Image 1 (cartoon, helix red, strand yellow):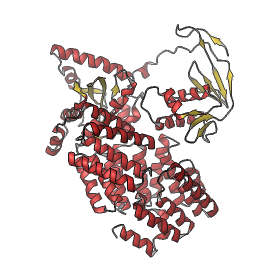
Image 2: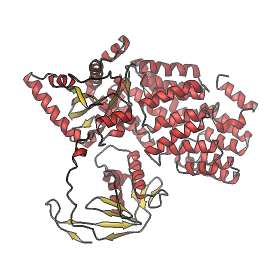
Image 3: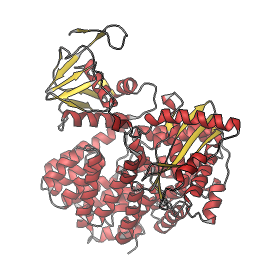
Image 4: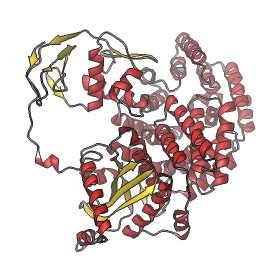
Length: 632
């Protein structure tokens, strides 16, 4: 190793450069080179690599990586998995042979690592590139602009001379077409405390929720807009990608229980400021503030708001500030949709309701969390469904105008085979909030499992229009197409998921299903082995369909044993699928009857799932469909 001269006037810096495989990493430059070529990589994946190189030859636990790469932040395993996925892509590590996963523990490098001399004494100082400097960097460059803007707004307000003259001047002479679609970009966190990121994210989501209740307005959902957090793109570029007329952006500053929000509305095609305002509120009043913001934005863009929507946006509520804070933390973790994150979300929602027993949003969040835990198979229906139902009913009792608990209740009633009541709840949710994406894709899925494919596909497409970059929405839309036996359309949607993330398990699983249905068993197995959404039962089913019963039974036993060791819920529907593929209808029916008794939600697929096709003429199977109240 060579000693480098001072960098940045802070004394000597020991520059280290590691070589591994056909890659090199320069610590001082934070530069990754693959086969001699510099590879652009975001800071978090770079830091993950740095930590692994510092402990080359050792297993670095997930906890250590989370603490080192995201110090002091509330993050979950999903953030680490995303960083690892991006790092593997940069390394060209398609087989995961360079960066090894140690199941349920962490990661380690799987190739020899050696130290090499650093190529230079200090990082080269680069001149700024002016065209890029003009780009809007959501959450970074704009953060400083909003700091200054917030200070200016407060100063002008203090002297009583703040008017909207500047923005009105911008509008004069500018031919603006009517704005019928908006994207609310992630609000910047100006608190100086990275652990407050959940607050900025939560307030972004709440504003989206309020705006989406206006039927005449298309509002892009949370998952898609969050893709632009920290991204250097101009607002016209973002608007074109999301297919919207306008953009709302802003910042959040928190001090104790006081929150200041600064927002502005921009006509995206010309990057023209139309309106801006700053608000100062108690934390417990931010829900009312989001309603006020939604009303103001609707007035500015002259969108039609119905009397019932106006009434809904005018409803005022008071929330305990501590309960509100816990609720936003719960939603932060719920949005990550992993087992650990969902369990944390449950804890936060419970704490919020302990502090404020009359807080409907926290009960709605609790219902959503239990629904996801049941859907993932983390909780069995016998345990999870009563908890989800109690929370959803409590939320509706406190505030029947919330779309979220009606959607959760629709899912629960479908779990109880009460299909008619489930449909009414889904429809009620979308009456209350026609832009509620989760309500849309859950209702589309309900229509699909009922066999109403012509109705399901347009609903799924509407969800996609509102959340075009969401892997979950793409996957649900793909499943609706798949269950309608439209395999080419389904494959296209699953491939779009993999364009966003080549290792996304939803995309891999979906493509595996399509290849299996098309009889391409080898390719299906390759896809399904790279994900673990069904704990390997799907791989066993494909081996059986491909004519390899011995390997199918081995995989079945292995998967069953793993679930028992992890003390997770053994979903009878998954096991039944394997026996159907093995041609053992008696054993398949035994597991289906067990699933019926346990209310396994997977049995909702019986009417449309291709793997159950060999059972359709069996009188026992037909009787089961009747007992589950499926419409004939």
